[in-house]
Length: 464
Image (cartoon, rainbow, N blue to C red; front, top):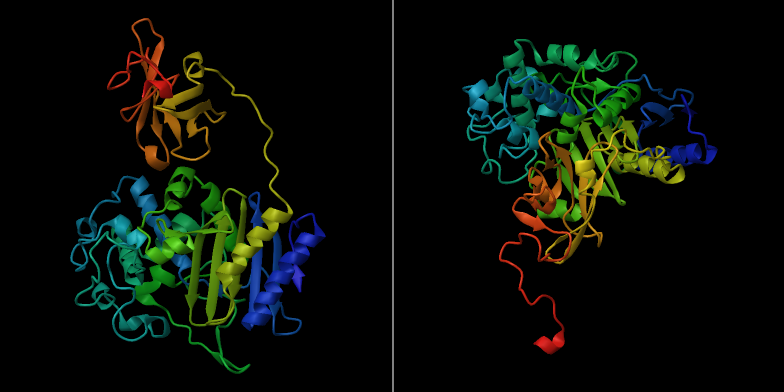
């Protein structure tokens, strides 16, 4: 009951993938479950299991994907930022006045740190018609904020409704039309839509104490659509996963996608214990020694997960048509692990740098911050890296600024400037990194070390 496109080479890997989704469908009691694995920018495996003999869903069958929709909405918002139409630090009120939640900034809405409630007031919005909530005021309570803005992560569906309305205001077109024109069409996601298109799966509730099923209603979410309306297929979501990993300049650059995959919300204590965080419209998790990003989704009758490991260049999509059952995010993580461990990524051949800047090459090698030993390396991508020789401690890569300085890209030194301080004769005295001095020898007496170096130099215990 499995089909494949350009399959992985090892039959044992394919069987392990099939076994994992078969266990998930059987133990999770899902009417059907469909999955895909992506590697090197293409779908390499597709599999499905179903309770209906001879009717296994393929990669073109639509399932409702719930909150994976939020990642699509976040892409639209980041496009507005990259075009200069807004700043992520802008309060919503600047662009969309009169909502009653205008003090929240755009980045807070993206990262679920706005303090807004998790759900809209009134009847259960996922199982009732969006016509009950025709205005933005209908998806926000009289007192929409439950927490101070920016202080904690608190998942908010109404927050993404506001982001969808922001897109509509700045584009002058419905969210659905902007999504189709700016994301779905450029990425050829022809089977992703706001309403089901045949062939599509039906949504079911499976009785928790009996092997019986109940059909779930399919409602148009109306104003709440930017938070969870979309239907899609494993084939389309596989292509979307490639985009989220590598970028596409027709939609968003690789640099902006890295920003979306970077933690932006302060995690709760339980999230720290679970290795979980949230970026800009993307969930982040550290599992089995592997950093995973993507998003999950659920609506009555459906479960969905899109998960990728950028380092392994492997992604997985898992969709099921039941309200509760298999933990699809764990299944997706396991599919990635199976592939990454069974068929490790073959590294690209080492290649030397195309050009050598002797002034930069002169800086390569060992440096000391006080008595801590560091190595400065030049890499083929034109970056400079500084990392402790012990393997533990502050480390960062730095991008050149074109004026003989470099700016940190990550960790403690993100945004900090690294520069070489030279003597009058042009020789290097020390490196300055955000005022920290790195010298060629520990507390080099010939360098300008703040506080000076004791003229009697290093000594043994007899000097105490």
